[in-house]
Length: 69
Ligand SMILES: [Cu+2]
Image (tube, rainbow, N blue to C red; front, side, top):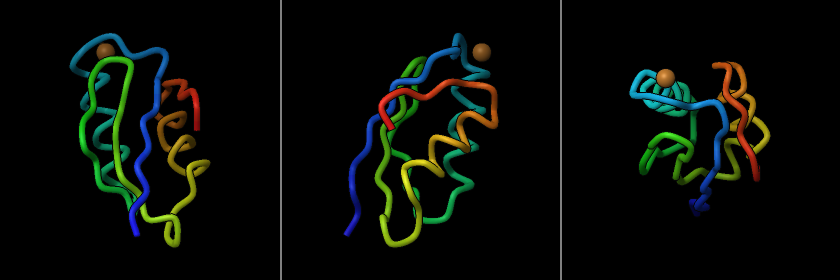
């Protein structure tokens, strides 16, 4: 069963940021990206495979600051 998650993300400003966040999310097992735009990402994830903390960490590793995870 997939769960939905929408993250607000600080520090994104342009298409490069959108691409970086999308690539980071697409690289996580158990994550299905729905949409990424400046300041926000929506996705579905499998809680048996991945935690919201791991998802937030992957975004933080790219240099952006997720909120609400
Ligand atoms: Cu940018």
